[in-house]
Image (cartoon, rainbow, N blue to C red; front, side, top):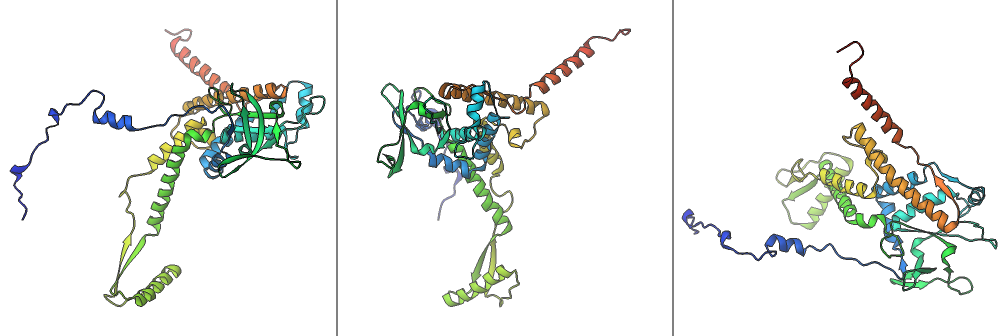
Length: 376
């Protein structure tokens, strides 16, 4: 028999423990967490297109963010600054059904998704641009020299995690010189010759969001359709099988079942409301992480919670700066790589509305400060 004398209780003496500065338990745990280091890639590089494209196609939130970035960057479409640029861009048809606007929309979304967008840019003998034909980013190897200068692009195929050059009908490697390829890179950093996929930094938040939503699916399903635990007064497999068939028929056709007394009992295995941690705030937090990192406010995605009109305008204004920067990058690359001068018009600027509000508020304050004529 156990003794239950309360006088035997003791108190810990943590005050007498001495820690070495910097090696306290809380610091050891913190320092043991490794975020991971990463160097830049400056030689051969092939985009892991299948991975990032899969996220874009299967995660609606990521797709919505990337699509909005593409829509707003292209905006109301391009405007050629010269007659030469206008004539050149009007004859570009991509795969035969494209236009320059649709190619740019495709290019921005592709660049955001996988970090790269490639389009073959053939020219005639007079060096005039003939077309822009998008290419699968996962089939293009960026080859650079030891100094980090792009030498050429080669079409490749990935087999057993190894890069193999792709050959044409004559058995020659398919290679493009730098001026034969239109190449957009998403937020290139340091000396890398490639861009950074938008979903890369979001990968952890995306997985957390998907796991939480999948868990919520199970929770709601168990609310509506709880598990039934039948306790049978038999261990005969034949009798259990017969009863199982009847129980499944009952559930299938939503019919009543009549059971002899004390032959079986039923317990429901459901998840009572408020019995678990509420996952909704966690889902919202991970969703906001994706939205913030993508630089697209909720209001642009067609949804907003508890935001005043003034807050919504400021969020849209911040989004406008992001889009205008993206437009400047695209415009610069078109001029540098294709030799054509264009501009993209922002879909709808918030500046006039903010200025009107500012003037209105300033006028109201002025009227309150300065007394009207004939009054004190």
